[in-house]
Length: 570
Image (cartoon, rainbow, N blue to C red; front, side, top):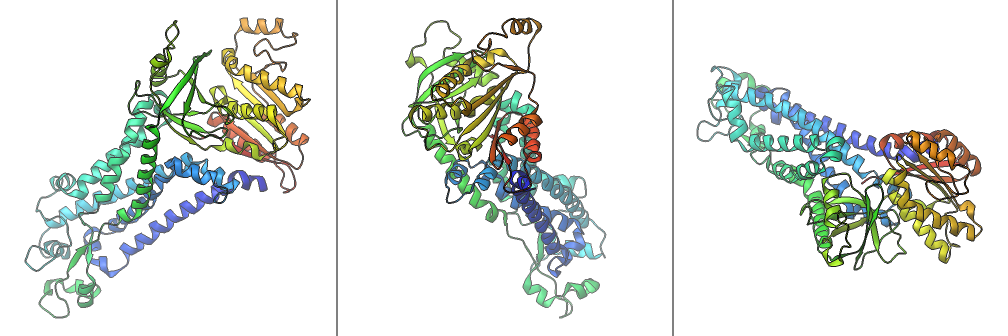
């Protein structure tokens, strides 16, 4: 139970608090519009749909306040790097910023749907009330404002029936126009954010996501028309709707029931979102300033498996292990920024990324760097690069544990290249102050070529550990998950050789997938009473498996072994 709280508990606590606040705001604002006398006559016209429109509006304000905060990367990196502000548990929650961002987005979609449907009924009934037969309370209320000295409660002032009246509201009133625009923007943002679109058509995701600017502008001015109206406090003191609604035909004729006066609710959304919008504006200004700083590509290395390595230098650039940057290549696209994990170590005098060629943008970068040509590319012909970052990730906490499991899948090994390089440099100089005592490294790949660019680093580490009589420091397990019959025959023939036929390492490549339950139980047996960090950069399915194993193989006793799961998110 203790480790379940460590791995899941705080995040579940955060989610429950967030859900609880949504429920509270919905219920509170529902009562605000469904109970007080101020909106008695408004409810006569609109019924329960009034409260059902305003309650989700309050929740929309709350969630739109939150939606920008998880993507303020510089703010999160500052908080993450400040030990005074953030404990290890809080930093682990900051690493789940995109998960929270998506949850808030879906909540915005839910409340938008409720708000929109309720207002469709409100508009229909408001329009219908203007053309209703005389002699009813709704007709009298709708007629208020037609004479001098009166104020209206029904925002629809024309005498046009449905459905033309409803369309008139949607496309001529400020609330209608902005409502249509921000709803369409939200639909485009959410539908283009699916995993399929992000992976196959990243440009579509990138451009449509910037409709959030239109969304927030529309959101802020949406309530400026003040179409939701209630009875004024002065009018309530003279005109009690609980009593006077029964004698509506005598309004203004008796002192006890003068004609009620109404006023629109002032817009409130800006008060909720102005703070996060200011923070996000500062975030974008910092990103712009960083993007203008000169970056020099010092070396381009072509690796197997459609992978290139860019080694770069930038004045004042400082990094920690496992961090990532955003890269823009104006020669490919003047607007697109793409995230890449840093594969260099803080001890090196340059920073590097490995880019796998899997789409239009990466293909464009490949060609812009001259990698499609056979001849040597002159340095001055290399494209200009803009860099934003670095930003913190879960991998920064690797050196906070004595024992860690590092799990990479395919190109997901890149964060751990930085970690292992840093370990190598520390061992080359002085490792006496290194808290980390044991690394279990797992790398899962489908293709043998994927191992080649990373094998040199592992060979260097292997030699370094043996030279210092500490070969047990690093245990690595490389799994090949895909092969054909010809490869299998080749593996069998060379299996008895001293070094592995694929990687050139003494540790043989394994075939298939790890039995994670056995791996966790074995490691738990070797390190009783330890807190073991589990770090993954890989697919969601593997993340679920490792998280479950981390929980199930941790002991209830606080003094027992505990696996702490961490996943890269960017």
